[in-house]
Image 1: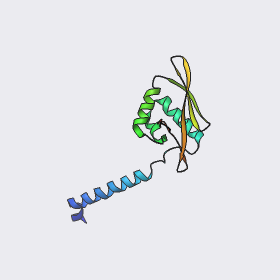
Image 2: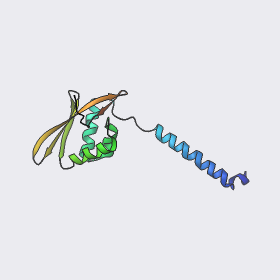
Image 3: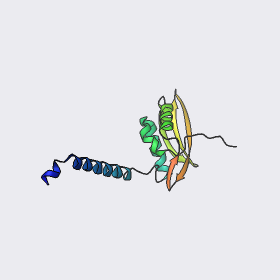
Image 4: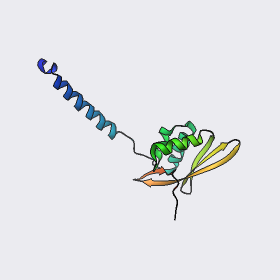
Length: 125
């Protein structure tokens, strides 16, 4: 046993197995994207925009990932997010910019039983 503890190959093998185990556990523990209900989704989107945190917004998106999350948070960085809610198939975010109140609507989609928001505008027709 003492000889094995002094063997470099043994430690390389232990390191490799430990690293692979950590990666597998990390991937398995990632939360599913989106939220359980559209109302929870609206609350989380609002929270992420208030905090100007694209890391919070990214897992709530249907498409676009980090780039869309960053540009959306950047767009709202000069506003005061007043609130958000779910209405008629969309997350509605109420905000104030330069003293003017407005609403931003983003359609909600269901993916694998979870609700996500689509902030990417796609042309129709």
